[in-house]
Length: 114
Image (cartoon, rainbow, N blue to C red; front, side, top):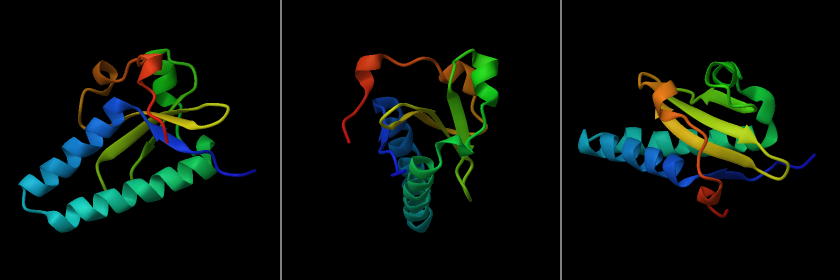
C-alpha cells in the first residue's frame, strides 16, 4: 500500500507557523528548524501508518476517526483523521493547551490542496 498524502488544514498550518514564530522569537533558530524537520518526519510516518495515533480524543470529543500523535522531541500533538485518499490534519497543538476547547470539527471547505 502506498503512503497517503498528508494535507494540513488552514488552522493546522497556522498552528505550525505560530510554533515556528515562538521558537524564532525566543532566538532558538535551531529549535525552529528541528521542529520543522520533526513535523515533516511525522507527516511521512502518518502517511505510511495512519493508525499509529491514539483515538483517545475521538471518544472524549465525540469525533469519529479522530487520532492524535505526539510529535517526537517536541511538546506538540498532531490531530488528524485518515480519509480514503489522504490524511486530514486538523490541528498541531501544544500539549499543554486546552485541547478539547481547540479541537472541533472543521469546515469541510477548509481543506488545503497538497
